Each structure stands twice: as C-alpha cells, then as structure tokens.
Image (cartoon, rainbow, N blue to C red; front, side, top):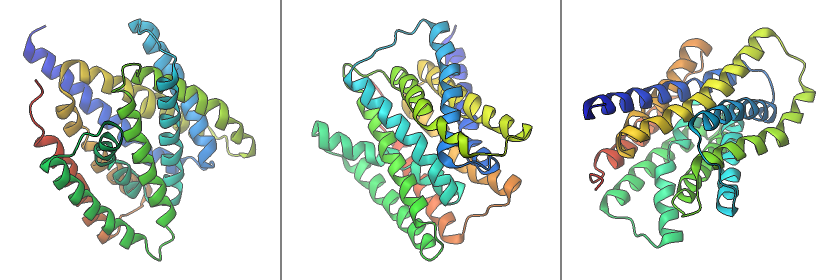
Length: 280
C-alpha cells in the first residue's frame, strides 16, 4: 500500500467515525427511555461489536489498575453524555463534551507537570469564552444541569485519553471493560420501561452497534494511517453534524447564544489542532 493510499484510508476512516458519532444525539432523543437504561443497553451492544473486533484483530487485552481507571472514565463519559442529552439540547451536549482537549491540557499539567504553551493557552481561553455563551443561553431555560453534565463528560473523556499515555494503559481494553461494566450496572434500569416498539429497539441497536461500536473501530483504524491531529480535525464534523441532524429530524433548535458559543468552541478546538506542531 502506497503512502497516498494509506492517507486516503485514514481520512475515510476518520470521516466514517465522525458520521457514526454524530447520529448519537438524534437516536437518544428518539428513544423514550430513561438515560440509564439507554446507556446500559447501548454499551452492552457496543462491547459485543468491539469484542468481535478485538478477536478479529488479535488485540491483546490488558487488565490492570490503569486500564480499570480508564474503564471507569469511559463509563462515566457515556453515562453523563446520555444524561446531558435528556436534560439539554443535543447541540449543547456534544459541543460541551467536545471541550475535552482543553481538560486534557490541564490534566497533563496537574499529573505530568507539563506546562501549556502559547497555543494551548489561546485554545483554552477561546473554548472557555464559548462555554460562557452556553451558560448564558441556559440561564432560565432549565438546561444548566444538562450543560454541566456534558462538561463533566468532557473532563472524564480527557482523563481516558490521558490514562492511555501511561505505560500500562490501553485504550481499547479500557473501552471494552468500561462498556461491559456500564452495561452490567445500568441495563437493569430497563425494567421500568414499557415502550419496546420495533422502531425503539432498532434505534437502540444502531446506537450501540454503530454510534459507539463502529465509531470507535473506525477511529482506531484512522489512527493507524494518519496522525492524531489530522484525525481530530476531521472528527470536528461531529459537533457540527450532530445538532443539524437533531434539528432536521427532531425539530430541536439551538438558541442564538448557543450557536455563537458553538462556533467559538469549535473554532478554538480547530485552532488547537491545526496549529499543532508536526509529529516527529
């Protein structure tokens, strides 16, 4: 395979990952279950898909303290994100979670004493300015709790990626065990549900198999062929497509301040990634 072919494959995989991730907000709105039941069920489905991928690729699973802490992080990410989608708009939820790179920079400073440079500080300032717009939009709307949960989801997401930097860390293992753990703990919440129409079950299966399972497989594939910066820039499609799909098919619209905040946050993340130094 030539270098150009590898790059094309990596770009296509990253685009596929972003498209899979972006359907999450719409599907969560279409499933009339409580957030815990949705997240537990979708994680059980996702762990089956990723388990098959691990078996097919002969990836060696790790099980240690770092991996388990990463599993707790991924379980917290998915749970908080579903809760946020039920309490605020899908656009607010995904963009607030997309602040993850900012928290990653801060966590790297806290745990590794790696001081942020000018690029990181500018990005943090821009993203925090965008977050302020979201909270002004949420005042009096009853969405403040949802926005806070989405923001917390982004912090746990950053923690998951940071743990992967440790020698004993393994993102795929953390993801697999986190999904199993979340599925076992939260799926019993399905007992209180009464709506099991075919369209609801279909949406749930797609949510688990495609929006979580296949999305992470595509993301892992893209990182085999292109650098993380390029993959991250391409995945910026997610917070753009997510609220558009929800607006078109569900009729949920972002307010003017939320739109302005979203543009600022995505702009800050794009600046952080595009201005990143070339990997050596």
